[in-house]
Image (cartoon, rainbow, N blue to C red; front, side, top):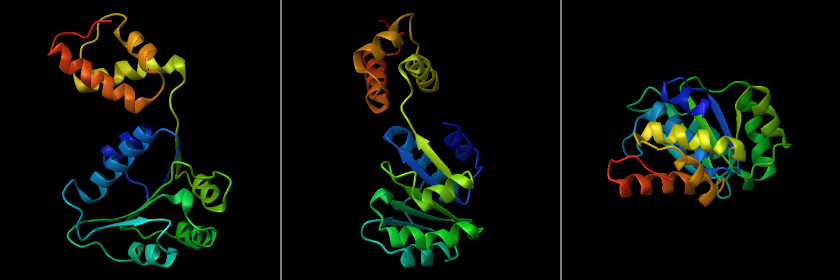
Length: 191
C-alpha cells in the first residue's frame, strides 16, 4: 500500500520487482506506477509490455535504454517474472547497477523466488516489494479503509461480517464491498 501511495503521488523508483500472493495489491501497485510514469491513456510510444517467458533480457534492456516518446518517462513492464530464465534474470543485474533515469522497469512476478540473484539485488536497493494478504486481525481495518476510500458507509459489525463471510482474499473482499455498496444504494451497509 505504501509503494502504491508513493507512486500515486508521482514518487517513482527506477525499478520495481513486485512479488507475493496478493494479486489485487500487485495490480493496484502496477497500475499506479503505470499512471505515474506514462499517464492513463492507451499503451503508446513510451510503454513496452513483455512476457518474461517469451522475451529475452536483451529485448527488455533495449527497451529500457530507448528514450521515451511523447512522455517524460518510458515504462517497461515485464509480466510473469517468476518464469523468466535464470540467464535472462542474471543479464538484468547490470541494469540494476545503473538504471536509465528516464525509464521505469516494472518486473511483475507473483510467484517470484526471493532467493534468486535478481530478487536479492532488488531487495538490496529497496526495489523488491512483496504483496501479502493481511492477517486475519488486519482484515477489518483493511475493509474499513477500502470503504472510506470508496465513500461507502459501514455500520457497526458490517466489516466483521464481510471478513467472516469472504475470508482473506482481498480481490473477493473488494468485490464484495462493491456489491454491498450497490445493493445498499447509498445507504450505510449493515451487518
